[in-house]
Image (cartoon, rainbow, N blue to C red):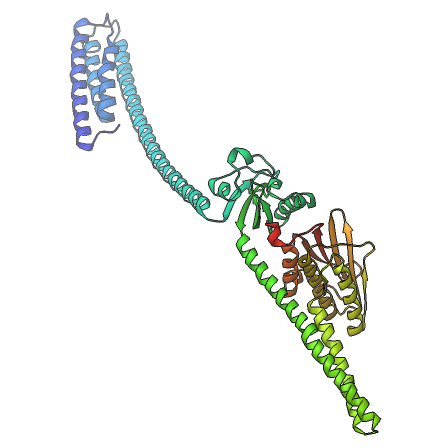
Length: 479
C-alpha cells in the first residue's frame, strides 16, 4: 500500500537517518574489534533498511558511510600483512555494499510496481463485478416483469418445449388457461394438449416440424384442457435456435379465441340461415305466385287462340317467359338451400350442383361417390357444400378449367371432400393465402373440426381437399 506523498517523504528521511546511525555504530564496533572479526554482515542491516524504506538515494548514502567505516577499520590502521589485502578488502566492501543497496532498492521499486498493478486490477475487477451485478439485477428485474406479464395476461399462455417436443416449462398463466399443474404436465409431450383425432392426424408434429423448417408455425385449432373440455385457440410455435443454427427447443404461445369463434360461427350461421330463409321464400312464395301467373297466362293464351285473335302469340310469349322465370327461381332457391334435411342430402345436392355447372358453363363437371357418405349434421353438410361450390367457382373463373370433378369418399375415420380441376392452377405459393374465398373455405372447414388444403396437381390444375371427422358436429358442439 502506497503512503500519501508527504508521509512517504518523511518516512524516507527517517529510514535514511536510522540507517546512517546504525551504519556509524557498526563502523565504530568494527574499528574496535579489528580485522580478526569481519562484521560486514552487520553493515547490511542499515544498508537494507535505508534502501528499502529510504529509496535508492538513501541506500547509496548509507552504503557510502558503511564503506567509510569499513575502510577506517580495515585499511587505515594497516593491520594487514600486506597493503594489497587492505586495498582488496576496501574495494570488496565498497562494491558489495553498493550492489546490495541497488538490489534492495530495485526490489522495493518492483514490489511497489507490483502492488500498484494489483491495486489497479482489483479496482478494475471490482468495477467489473459491480457492472455484472447491475446487469444481473436488471436481468432479474426484467425476468420478473416478464413472468408477471405472462402469468397475468388473460386468455394467453406461453411455455417452452424441449427439442423432442416435450413440455419443459410451466407457469401460473398456463395453468390458469389449461388447468394442468406443473407436476402433471412438465415432461409430457405437446400432443397431450390436443384432441385425439388431431394427434392421430399428426398435427402436433406438424407444428414443431413447421417451426423447425420455417422458424415459426401458426394455426387455429381445438385444444383440450385438463378437465377434458375443448376450446378454440391460436397456437404459435417458434423455433429457439443457437448461434450455430441448431434448434434448442420451441416457444409456444396459446391464445384462447373461443369467444371470437363462437361469434364468427353465429355470424356464419345467421348468414346461412338468412340464405335458407330467402331460398324458402323464393320457392314457397315467389315460385307459387309465378306459377299462378303462368297458369293465368296459359288460360289467356288458350282463350285468345280459340277466338283466332293475333294477341294469342303475345300471350304465348308471356307463358314462355313466366315458365323460364319459374325455372330460374327454383334454381336460385335450390342454390340457397342446397342440402335437404336428411343424411343423404349432401350427396344429392352435390350431384345436382354438378349437373347445373355443366348446363350453365358448358364444361365437364361430375360428382363421384363410390359408397354412400352420410352426414348427420345439417349445418356441417351445408359447410361442405359451400366449400365445394366456392372451389368449383374458383376453378372456372380463375383457373379457366374445362373439367372439374367433385369427389366424396371415406378415408379411415374421416370423410374427405375433394374438388379437382384441369385449369391453369396456382401461379404462386402466395395464392394459397390470398382471396376471401379461400379464407372462408378454410374457416368453414375449421368450424366443423376439419382440415383444409389447396395444392397444385402434378399434371396441371388444382386440387382442394377438406377432411372432416366422421360423425362431425359443428363448432358449438365441439367446444
